[in-house]
Amino acid sequence: MSRSRNLLVGAALAALAAGPAAAERLGLGRPALPEEIDAWDVAVLPDGTGLRPGSGDVATGEEVFAEKCASCHGDFAEGIDNWPVLAGGIGSLTDRRPVKTIGSYWPHLSTVWDYIHRSMPFGAAQTLTVDETYAITAFLLYSNGLVEDDFVLSDANFRDIVLPNAGGFYPDDRPETEYPLFRAEPCMTDCVETVEITRRAVDLNVTPTDPDGRPAGTLPPLTLAAVAPAAEAAGAAAPEAPAAETAGAAVPEAAPGAEAAAGAGPDPALVAAGESAFRKCAACHKVGEGAQNAVGPVLNGIFGRPAGGVEGFRYSKALTDMAAGGLVWDEAALHGFLENPRRFMRGTAMSFAGIRDEGERAALIAYLASLGD
Image 1 (cartoon, one colour):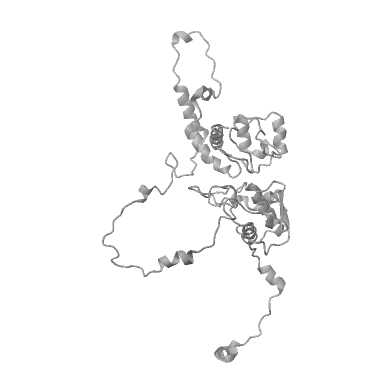
Image 2 (cartoon, helix red, strand yellow):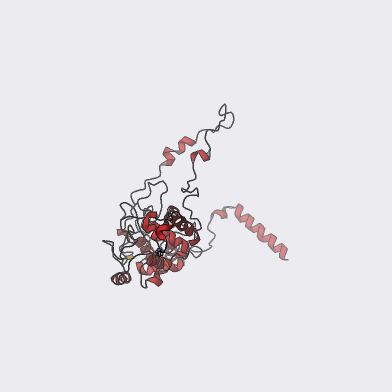
């Protein structure tokens, strides 16, 4: 009985599909309600169309970012492993290795808000509230040095924010200018008389390397044990005084760092490793000629300088209090701060988790010590 019924139903459906009734409305479902369409339509256009009412400040955004985003993008939005960097790189688009971030490359803030609200966090998309999305966006603006730390972003002032690369894009005209060049009938046989290899990848040097031959940007394993040979070599190079001059005389023990003070200088390999390690800091701190304050102060000449002395930068109260107490950025202070900023300076505005590896800290400090004013 059941099989006969199924056959009858199948025949009826086939007849409907074959007849004029197939073109008619079947009477299934109902029109979507405006509220349902609004819930599905989450896109935000460059002019702000589609933004939800709400607001969020930088401080809240920092907290939410640390909880839900930093595991991939880093505490300072500097990127971890292959996860993208979101801050820094402003002015680098003409460099050989441009840093494409929200501050340096993205043209519209609406893209930032829309992408966070639609697709983040990874694996838990659309779990952020509207206000959390505004707060994270405000924090990313702050991380790129585009707003102050007391900034509040909302649907009311959203359209007033213009990203640095807003004018760096132009309409895609490839269908008119490039596609026709590749639409000719391709040659498949006897296209040239002979085939000759003229260059090889090794000749073109298409894989950039650091001075020691490692792939560019990689940081070698480094511990204090790697620093010791340089210090020993510096001490071994000092000539011994004649026995007649030292007989019966007490030879004072050399003070720590005496070799460097005598002109030996920091180990160039250690400085180079520190320069690579500085990538973790570059999203917020600038160095070198023409460097300016960003999210953090310029670090030129910081080694051995009293804390809080960069002109024009607004420091946190925690730092100004320690600076008033005589804090100097010597080797010991930098080691302590870089290992755990929050433990060293309670209340610091720097949310970076710190560098646990002592050798990496030593390399970074050597690099900072090599920077002039």
